[in-house]
Image (cartoon, rainbow, N blue to C red):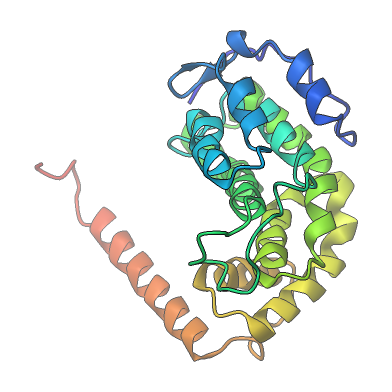
Length: 263
């Protein structure tokens, strides 16, 4: 986790400039990543729109890997996230074989892992994570973590691209977009989207068997004050009970030592 000053100009939080503008206006070589600087990121991000699916697949790791490590937000994370959001509607990104299961098909559209990455990154910067970090590091944590603040400020711009896929014809795309949108709308400018996302969440729960997606939307609905008892299936209840047992076991273990455990 880094706390140094970002060296790239960020757009107005509600604006999402074109991909090429973002690429050209960012001093990538000056930005910290998990493994050095972001000098190689422009080439990798550009290859995400290649017509060749194998090139796009390889570019995913090259573009996202350097800013994906230990749930941290790096100097390069925000410009990468904005570039990813700016290409979500590129024709090559959404190319895929929708006639097969999207999770196993070799032609799964690049759009899905990009949405998934945006969502995972947004969860790493959500209000719950901030609250945990403030308990650990003090209430001034976010003031000192400029990269995290920059990402949180960019949430409206990212959401402006993600929300377009909430009604996508492909279930994997729209469900992944929904899960990505949930932490983004914690931004004060986006709270009004909560009822719409709640409607999408209920539709997901009526059809999806994806454990990760179901857990995310159930947690969101509960946080928004909705009664989810009629929306849970047997698998949801079993998962919830298992999570409760794991939390209880962890709490018991953590409280069982007066000193650091002897290992």
